[in-house]
Length: 124
Ligand SMILES: Nc1ncnc2c1ncn2[C@@H]1O[C@H](COP(=O)(O)OP(=O)(O)OP(=O)(O)O)[C@@H](O)[C@H]1O
Image (cartoon, rainbow, N blue to C red; front, side, top):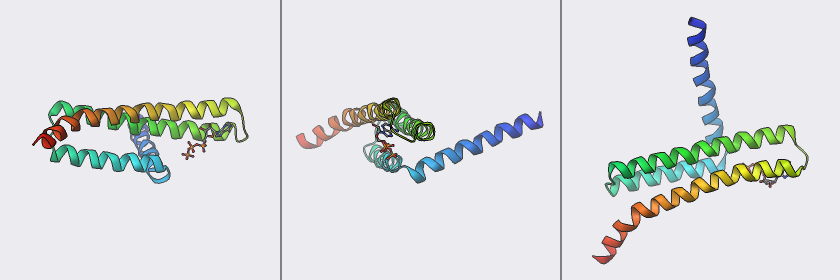
């Protein structure tokens, strides 16, 4: 029982190490973290609703989680295929595509939340 709990706690340690590796080594992840800070500050200033916060938090988590999966896939591909192989390139392109899809979704959500308020300000 004690061993199972200890293994569970160690699992958290490994996961936090993964998050640290992501933030320390990946430029894109750093940019996404900065974007989350900017969006959260804007949301606070614009007093967005609870549902809008849900959308912002959900898409931010999806983008960062996919960035971590993309980095993991890149590492495995580099390990098993250090030299050029079309399938290695395909795997990396698909993983990068997944991040891009989520990032486009994040931009759309930001536009949907910000645009009505901006239009209101512009209209006076
Ligand atoms: N072993 C390989 N075989 C074939 N194509 C590859 C291979 N490695 C990389 N590529 C191609 O080069 C692109 C860029 O790969 P790279 O490993 O530089 O990733 P990246 O997206 O620049 O990530 P990062 O900057 O985080 O390392 C891939 O999306 C893929 O199209």
